[in-house]
Amino acid sequence: MKLPNNTLIAHEKLIQYLLVPRKRNDKSQWLAKAGYTLENWLLLENDLRNQILSLDVVLIENTQYGQMYEISGKLTGPNGKSLKVCTIWMTENETGDRRHKVHYYVSKQREDREMTYKLFEEVVLLKDIPEKRLKRGDVATIVEHHPVSKGEDGYSLEVFNALGDTIAVIIVHESAIEPLTENEIFSIRSLVAEGKE
Image (cartoon, rainbow, N blue to C red; front, side):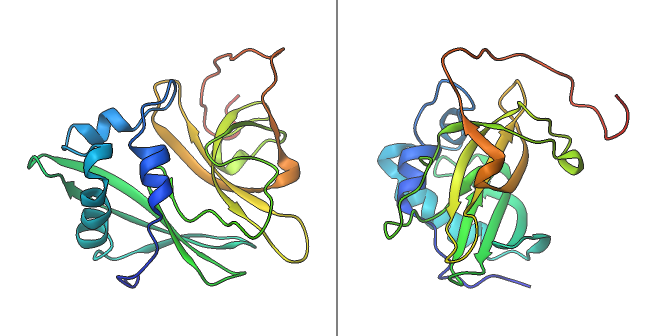
């Protein structure tokens, strides 16, 4: 199965997240290896659409907010260098919108409803998610807001290891996260398989 070529790749996620240097979990330097910069962000959008979106998708998760699909492939940048990418695409149940993530989420921010948290904000998990080997207290980055007309809104989160590599993309209820506070510090734990602690 393939997703349509007109699937949404939101500009703000390219120019405010992927191609912007960040203190933690920076992806801009990795994309720069293939020649992508803020100045040529339209090339990244075009290459995602033509090189990645044209590949077959695999359904990876069905949630109450929508279906998540994965496309893995090679992204060849303007300098001729190639990056292996794992991309996540989502079709939202509430709107039918198809949204996109490139090894880190890319999608459209809604303006019709106030979000509790800002896109790209770091938050703390309030519960264990054993199927993804995540624990209460793990830190994640918000990459999408999933408003619903009835019930609790959801958020897509990207979780990184200590080296800044993506280890999971998950969708949780708003009540499953909270903001970081000034009286907290980061700590390190081993990422172990379920049931092996």
